Length: 369
Image 1: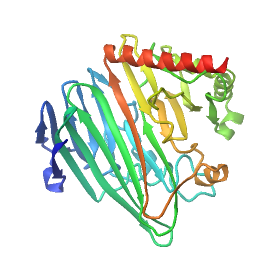
Image 2: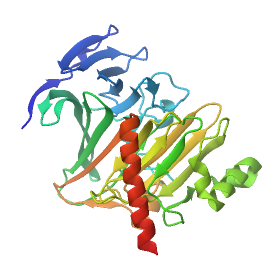
Image 3: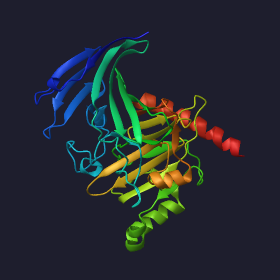
Image 4: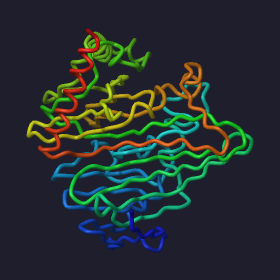
């Protein structure tokens, strides 16, 4: 049973001077304002901290645990107050969807990755308390998207941090308020910082059914020799992307479809295994996400590892995904719900998850024989 307190996040709680708002165990929540004017909420525990934008997409802008920055390197030091995806792209976690997701075609009318990434939340709350797993803090809120004759839904995400580890528990609920079925797409865009000499470990077996390049910039492929060679290399040998050699370049990006096998508990995981034995990770339920992606960019302007992006569709925009049959249908007044975890692991937790992944891989290999 949980004992908790709900604190509405009101604009008057935010100022340029960072102010403590709540404490639960060794968790502390504080409010502040970036120099750009965007409101921020910081939650710290014994291992690190996250910075969340409670009113702008409920993004996790930064995540830092075990004295290392988890978040991608971008051209943006702080978030900008805009709904334009590429004008403030650099956060650790962005919710993507719902009316569209991925890169729109010229015929699509939705923005890149939809309306959710920088959506203006009408309501935000901090929930503090304790349950059977100990003290926790949860940031949640509500965003209603309503367009006459087309869409009317409510998005309710939640981000939960516990006391003594770097695991972030995330949920997203989408409720269809209309009296007719609603098409939807959702992707969790989780952007780690690639680490030199790190290695990607997951339960995706070899073969195109488990890992393959899924998106190519056609014009660039035809005009740029280095890009063409890079894409051809990953197409012929997808496994080569797993090791981050010093000085490696992936410009502008490579996008892969990945299908890691779930364990007996129904969860599948991917890790970026650091040279020191620690790791970054993403875990999700393939039963909730029919697709997952891996996105990598290593250039002079940005470095990012989308280690595992749980997704309901491929990233080709609404019309293409509708043609593939990849749209989810939410019944009138019904709810679609998604759960995943991400963050950082210490050496002991890394060894435990590595063993679990190896067991799943072994079972998968044996089942193919």
